Image 1 (cartoon, helix red, strand yellow):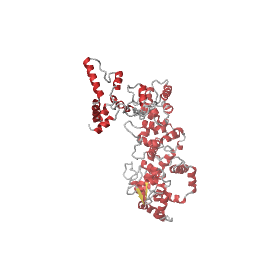
Image 2 (spheres, rainbow, N blue to C red):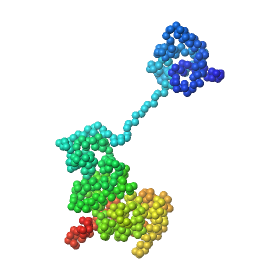
Image 3 (cartoon, rainbow, N blue to C red):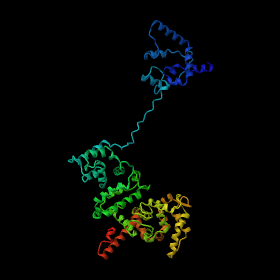
Image 4 (cartoon, one colour):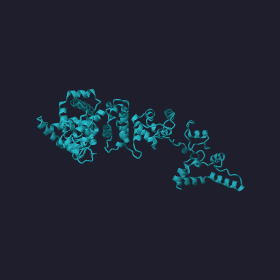
Length: 541
């Protein structure tokens, strides 16, 4: 052992090192140091005397006074350890206060025999923080008070009906306990009555609603769970049909349709198409829980539950809105085969659309037709078209028409693409003896209206960020609306300011319903009959 190592080893005080308390892991990490300390300890004269004393005790049969045999002997052994420093040559320790001193705390606590606390024991164990459970696969369990209150209410409603409740009686449970619209009652009933017994017992309801943690879920998740099929994670159009049947059968604002089942079916289809147009943003016909939560369908359902006049429920359920859509379709479908071709659609809005945009629609670029007839648009396809055409401020409409104008499908609208559609508008203005507006001038106007990030093209993000984006498409392919925008009718502007919550579609449907009802009244007076169309053609009303 070199002299430098000896001086290094000799600088330690065994009492401070507390060698008996060192962890074996610490010694394993530095085996050489432990070995050198051991040999240095053996070389001390006091160590030799201790070893001889122990050997003599063994020979004489006396009990060994070894370290670790007991707390008392351990303290004695520790105090008898020979010092590595010559007498009086150890450096003095710095003065320490008794409060907070590891040595004082060690001795006062009685945790160990040593007068000095080991530095290895100063670090306390890390406190394990208990994180409460925040994910529950089947929903968060209800609090006990909430559960007891619900059970008490269930007992009251099921009292005297030991066999259970029938579907008509179950409506009270849907409204008062589940707090859901009453026209969801039949869907909830069938969800619980899986055996189709025609009865829902108290226990079966508790298993589904209470034990299944349905009562703690938000209303969107509740409705989604009730309507969807067990093996799916989305809703389809078929899932909404039972809801619409119940609404038609029970809502006071739709009682007049009881005698016309064919128009009940058309009304239900139209409502469902409108729901998926606005809510199913992916356009795949699979309405997810995320889409349901982000939309306004739940609020519209609650409004329909509270409002007796269904026409005041403008979102999705208004009968007047259905009437306008259906009559518009009927006007264009001249042969009444429930299909529309290009020549039919070009007549829409008094020939407002250009041939080029109609061609793009029938190329099925913005949306694939659901119609199975080649080259023809069905009723569902027309609902999507008319909503896009008459409500260009809505995001689904902006997406619809953006795809039409984006000829190469690269996600941007260039000046050349917009000029391609505007050329036909320019020609129509010349034919109507109106002063034409050059494309260069109209392009500057559109850039000022939108304020795109890059003035050389428009993106869908640019259009969604502007309030006048819908007018861009009117400029490009709807001459009637383009001219109306240029003239800025003060009457229409005042209407918009008086009812800022109404959408473009709401205003259009209101105007058209008044016009159609006046035409119907006029024909009733001239014909002396309420039959506007031949009954054999299933004409509306």
